[in-house]
Each structure stands twice: as C-alpha cells, then as structure tokens.
Image 1: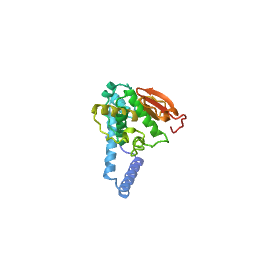
Image 2: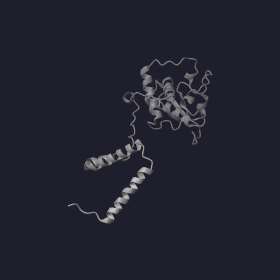
Image 3: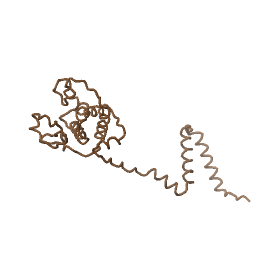
Image 4: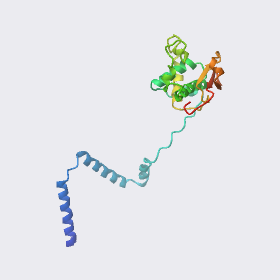
Length: 224
C-alpha cells in the first residue's frame, strides 16, 4: 500500500512546485551552451563517483603540482653537442649562432660557450645595446670600428662549414636557455692570443680558455 503523504508535507510540495513553475516562466532560459556545460558537469560528477578507488586517486594526481624540470647536465664536448636536438630560435638566436661561427668555430666547445657568455653579458649591461643582434652589430658599417671584426671587415659572411654551424647554433641555443655555468666571471670583452689591444691593459683579465683571453671592467655594478 502506498504511504500517505501528510497534509502539511503535501501542501509544502505543492508550494515548491508552484515556485519552480513561476521561476521557469519569469527567468530567462539558459543558453544552449550553459545547459550543455551543466549537463557535462553532471556527467563528470557521476563518472567520478563511479570510479574505483585506484582510478579516483589517479584522477586527483592530475591536480598535483608538476615537478620542476630536471637541470640539463652539460658536457663541453662535440659528442654532447651532437646528441642535442637540432637548435631553432628567433632572430637573436641566429645572430648569436653566426657570431659564434665566425668568431669561435675553431675554439673548443668550452671556449664557444665562453664567447657566447661575453655577448650575453653585454646584453645585460647598460653599456651596450639591449639585444643580442644589437650587441653583435654594434658599429657595423664602419670598417674596423665594429665590436666584432667579421661584421665590418668588408668580407661577405658565408657559412661554408655546415657541421660547425650546426654545433655552434646548439651552443647559442643552450647559452640563451641558461644551460651551463659561468665561465668568465662577468667578462664583457675578449681577444685572441694573436693580438693585444690597448684596452687589455686597462680591463681586468678574468679567464683564459683556448686561444681567447677574457676581460671585464675594473668595477662591476648591478647592470653589468
């Protein structure tokens, strides 16, 4: 036998139904997108409640913070570079790759990283342009008055050694990404052992790697 609903409960039920009907006629109807979102949310809630314990735990793992990326272990060798993925980047990456090719392709991998570090140090310094291309092309157009000789020696820059360029482009990519440790103690200048420019007697020598000697100003500030 069906159980009788108390009069008071019956009247309350009628009242709730009447209010719901009135709300449906007065309030604007939800958009299709809103109804679809509500239905989707309901289905997800039902699906979650039906998940077994193990799957439920796996679901909550999705909301756990991701672990920090493992630091890249660098080895200053051609073998290490050859195992790195092909390098790509923007115009500044191209500028740095070309500078390393023409300035240091015959240097050791450590030496190439050191040259890249000098160029990056200049970008950080208020004494030089604020981009890699700006630093590398500073003074270009005035013969032998540029910062990097290959940009103003009157010769056309042509890349003949493809493998060497591929490697230095990987050095450029790694240096821009901050891979590796500081090698030059904040150096902003360098020269090869074949020359001795006048400024080398003024600036402080910080490192000597391969055929390059590195220098920085006698004082350092937050900007350099």
